[in-house]
Length: 342
Ligand code: HEM
Image 1: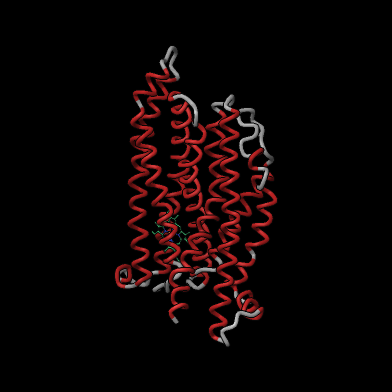
Image 2: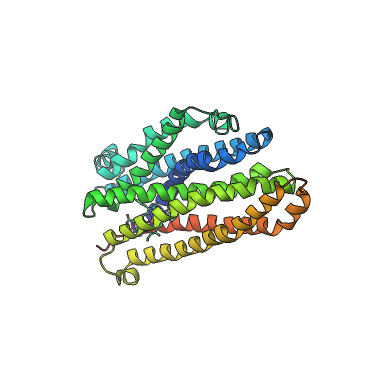
């Protein structure tokens, strides 16, 4: 019984956390490349070495996420089979696996494997050469490649929706579509935060302070728009999710599901505060610095030196956002493992 409880209360949330994070990153990375990294790198077309380093780092992250999702999914099926076998004679047999795969939950987990294989074929070895190919020249990888990447990643995200609480909420169509939108918008933000923290410093590695400013200021400006839209959608869909899954306001502190949701909400407030600081303080100051930098006869080193504080502030804020983003995913892993109260 003790082992069974440990599996239910610790292993499942951890595996969900792993799968959410991996799927969200895969989707968010494509959107980030298209809307932030490619436009920013197009402003510095001569930085070939930086482009290559960024693409190499991204390839590694994508590889880790594909592997991470496959491991989390395989282990979830294995655990589920082990729990089913507990009901019988305790032995995990091929029948325990068939019983898992016969359920909607098992089916939507199994469907991930062909999707992951297709993504691996599409992305591995190609991100390195294609992700930032043709920036500044108006050319790049084909639209089909991007559509395949985004489509398959959305599909992976939706396997969470179709194997979770949304399938039992009413009205079902609203719960499923709202949850799908919640996941996709959350993924765009989540992937973006990770890449702001990892790729932006990679892009400016070895460059002088003026160049760092040239990458940081437009990255924050572009990501700010992506973040405002995605967080706006996450907020509305998150509220609808809460109305669909929480029976009463007092459940927010009286029940385990409500408590997990309350923790998620507190973490979300942290995101809003950091986002506001990025948007209203750091972005505004860096935009002013860029105006000075682009004026004729500007002393790039002196302007960059004046704005070192903003760069440091950005690094701290993005590190904090990264920690909170992972904590939100972890709290969601716990949340979706608990009984909803509606
Ligand atoms: C950037 C912030 C957020 C991210 C990344 C995020 C991510 C997620 C993810 C991955 C799921 C799992 C969906 C599934 O398995 O089908 C989820 C579900 C949920 N989220 Fe969020 N979320 C965020 C913000 C919010 C906010 C602000 C609220 C409330 C206002 C909220 C309320 C919910 C609820 C109630 C669920 C349903 C859980 C269930 O199926 O039982 N989320 N979220």
